[in-house]
Image 1 (spheres, chains in turn yellow, blue):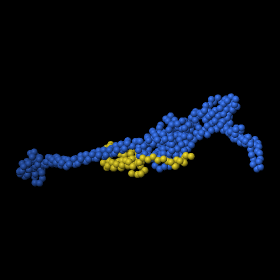
Image 2 (cartoon, rainbow over the protein chains, first blue to last red):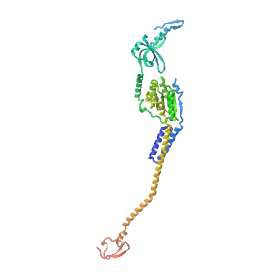
Image 3 (cartoon, rainbow over the protein chains, first blue to last red):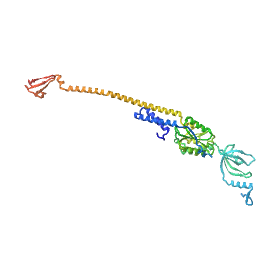
Image 4 (cartoon, one colour):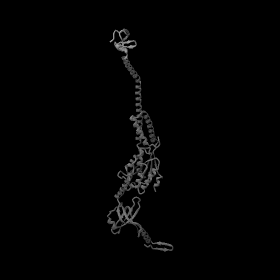
Length: 68
Length: 383
């Protein structure tokens, strides 16, 4: 899973994989590969949500320059 | 104007009157210009040759005394009240008797909401012609921004509303707040600067510009051309929530999304964490369900194949036997024994089979073969 991947890309791919799997059209080899990929994507998304820590910062100092 | 001075040794000294005359004459050389301000303290009396009022800068609060010939003022029939916005055409003047500086107005025009709106409308058309407001320029907002930039005034309300909406919906949000002027002549420049500063921050994925309601003039900075252009050219999507629903400052048109209140802007930039987790978990169950279904289907297919594999040899054997019987039947039908069994006989003369009467002559010994055994015989006569 590359770093540049965004959450929404991962989520979209995961949901496409589920759709393909649930259609029952994927042959076994592909189904297993899709399942593995889907699990990876799920873990990536969960991690993004679980490790994020809420934080409110003030851009003081730099914005200060805009004030007299 | 010649200004007389008195010399006391090497010191040149002016009388007050001479000084005022000198300054007045110097001021009198300045050009005639238009000045915009709000009318205050209008003083008009029939016995005065001039009317007097103060022009106030509504944004900076600076004041300027104005005098205007009463005849001209009356002729305009402006019916001015305190707070009316006007454009005054005049030049600086010194009232020498009191050393008071003021604007000597030659003409006066009311500058109202309509003029502001017309100026805004012109700017709006110009920017629209450049394509700044085009729908195809609007970028989708990120589903899950890594960091959110918020530009707001230090009046708590708008800022608090945005932050509350964001953290309620999505507690792990990271917000970077830039407080700045959101009103007055410096506001537009300050907001542009704040936007720029936020955009230079790493991982910033979306920007919110929020300001609570205010008068038409209060919100004018949000229609400032510099700000509108800065929002349009921002490297990340921008959501604006400025004033109330009906205000629609130009920055709203350039923004990628517009919210009618700061709270709604907050809701736009983050997902609902609970829903997001539910959706992810639903996808995961789908993943398992789908894979299990495929596995089950493939297992059944293998089972069916195996079953057919078991049946195959017996079928083959039976088919082989049937074919063999069939061949045997045909073979039997063709063999001479079968013909002999139907009552025919084979007659041989020596090694040759006798097929015609002419093949033998009377007295020739022949051998006769029957279905069972045979006998020797002599030919009596031939035909």
